[in-house]
Amino acid sequence: MSRPKDAKELLDRLGAKWSPDMDDFLAGKVDLSQMRCAVCQKKPCVCPEFGSPEYFALLDKRRGR
Ligand SMILES: [Zn+2]
Image (cartoon, rainbow, N blue to C red; front, side, top):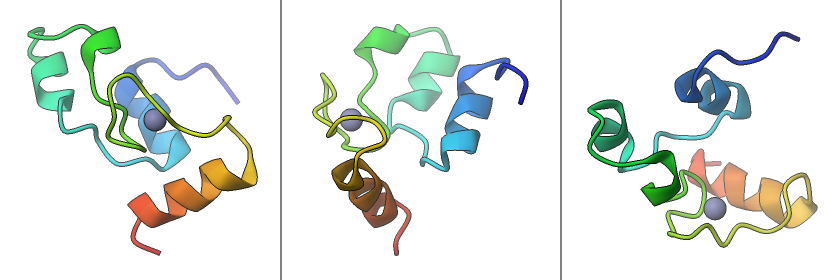
């Protein structure tokens, strides 16, 4: 697996939905660190530890499962 070349590809690979702030990010209006998390929608991110069952449960919820 090669390195994702940008944030969108990274998110696609994670299967996460776009952050509500992604448009502003792509427009250069906000920095990546200022974006709300695409998974928990919080800023700063309050996701469970990446890879944990809680994290994937949250991810599934975001994906509408
Ligand atoms: Zn998060």
